[in-house]
Every structure is written in C-alpha cells, then in structure tokens.
Image (cartoon, rainbow, N blue to C red):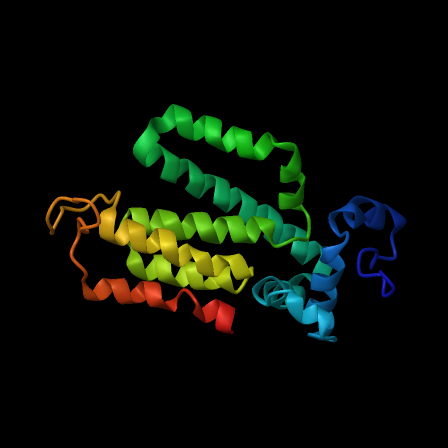
Length: 203
C-alpha cells in the first residue's frame, strides 16, 4: 500500500478501525477508484466496484469509507433477496437458516471488506430472483452488472436460460410440459433481455 490507500485519515483511531477492511486486492480497487486504471495489471480488476466507489467519494470524501459502505449495503441487500428467493420454494424456515449460514460463515468476513464479493453476491442473487419471478429485464440488467463486477458474472446466462425455458417460474405455463430436452415454456421476445448479460464483460 505505497500510497496509503488503507490509512488515508489523519486520525490514528479512524485508520485503526477502517484499515483492516482494506487489504490485498482492496488496494487495487481503491487506487483505481482514485486514479483510474494505472497499469496493465490493474485492468484485471473489473470496473463496476471502483466506479461506484469513485461516485460515492464525491459525497463522502473517502474512497475507503465508500468501499466499506458499498460492501455492507450490498451484503444486506443480498441476504434480503436470498431470503426471498429461498422462501419461494423451500419456505420461511429454510430461508432463515440459509441467511444465517451465509452471514455467520467465517469466510463471510470478506463481505464486509473492500472487495467485490458482496456486490457480486447482490447482483447474482438479484438476477436469479428476478428471473424466478419473471422480471426478465431486471434479470438481464443485473446479470450484465454482475459481469462488469467479476468475469464469472457472464456465466449467469446459463441458469437464466434454464429458468426461462424450464422453470421454476410462477407464471402460467404457456408451452407443453417438459419432456427430456423439450422446453416447458415457449420462447418470447422477453428472452432477448438475457442477451445483455455479456455486455458488462465486454465493457
């Protein structure tokens, strides 16, 4: 951390409290948010997260504070959507247990750090939930944002297509019952929204 991105405050107490949230790859994201892409190696970090940090910095005046806030808010949103998603098929009890397991798992430490993990979780769960309730525009846009957060986001296209063609979906079935590889639902213009998924990766 040669530029002190993890310890930007004049207060030793503030640095002590917030610096642990910014380690390893966090420094890359903070420096990109501050100065843009500055080396070939830095382009390995996808742009959405540092772009959000840069935008929030105009309000809060600290990339580090904004990065932590984005991670915490994203984690809260991700757990809320995950609860709703699981409850659709498995009920309230299982949904509650699922949320607690993710929140208390030791590696969940990274969801509160200046990393892309919590934002990526929010966007991926949000995309699947949107598909599950047949909001295809939201599903495609959130998947595109996920692919602008991490390269793996483009793989959301696979489960989204499966949900579109085979379910589970809440709507009335408009096609024949699934038989082997035959889709349960007919292809409609709304499926075109799924094609925006790779846009984030291309960007």
